[in-house]
Image 1 (cartoon, one colour):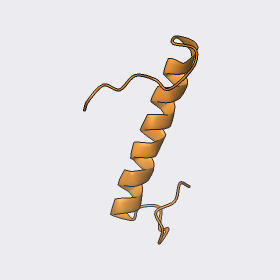
Image 2 (cartoon, one colour):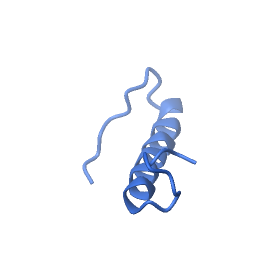
Image 3 (cartoon, one colour):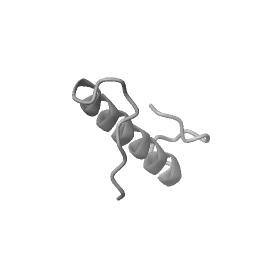
Image 4 (cartoon, one colour):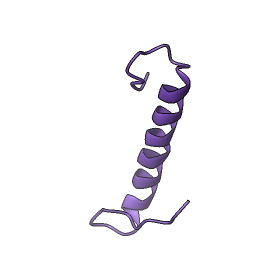
Amino acid sequence: MAHRPATNDSPDGGRELTLEFTLTKIQTQVYGTLGVDGSPTGGAA
């Protein structure tokens, strides 16, 4: 996985938020692809 700089104004405070958002985004894509959440569109639960 390539490391991408946080697109946030604060280099320190925005890092955790960016990381969590990225993980949530990835998790949503994974569950959406596997259809685990039972949502036809693969949306976040």
